[in-house]
Amino acid sequence: MRVILSLSLICFSSVALLGCSGKPSPMARGYSSYDKVYKSAPGVKPKDVGYEYSNQNNVTALKDMRYAAKDLVKKLDQKLSFSVDEVYLKISKNSAFYNSFDHLLRDELTQRGYLLSNTPVNAVSVDFIAMDNVPKCYAGNSKGAYKTVYLALAINSQKGKAQDNVGGFYEVPLYDFYKAKTMGIKMPECEVSDMEEEG
Image 1 (cartoon, helix red, strand yellow):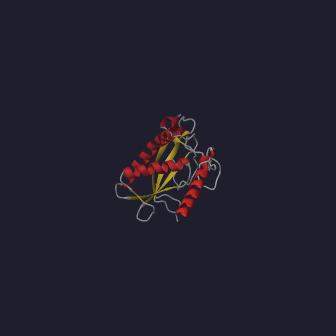
Image 2 (image 1 turned 30 degrees about the horizontal axis):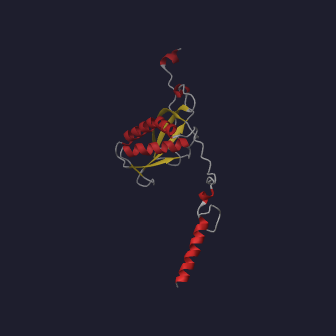
Image 3 (image 1 turned 90 degrees about the vertical axis):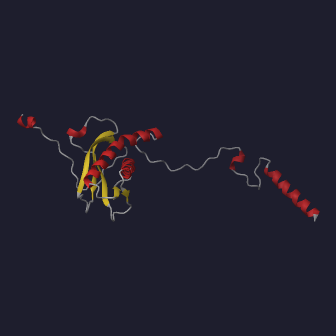
């Protein structure tokens, strides 16, 4: 019996020592032991968000959009007159611009005490609308990705038409912006002053 145990111990020790020799062997020891840097397969190329992504750049972009989201939610809150508890927010496009506003609007709605619903049943349906072809009198002198746009929240849209809405002109970065449905919302027109009419 001792001979069998001793023989088993010698065989096991030999195999274990072979595993420490630094050469490929039947003992599984992992990729890193072969003195090469581990290289995983290349991942999926990230989607272009319109700027070189960094934590600081992302914080700046969201900060420059938040004031618009905050103002829109304040206007919506005044329009609903505290008669609504749940909101079903819909964002029509999947892009950096719309996803950023989706995040910001949900954050602002939550801070104002609304419950965010994942269904329009028993909730006010709200669509986020963005239009970039603003009249010249509202356009401003922004450069680069920052442009004045008309942003709105369409309330209870049915068959592509909003029953009511709140909106305004805001200068925000248009990273990865695409045109989306407007739910029949029209931007305010430029007002012609009395002085211009007389001249």
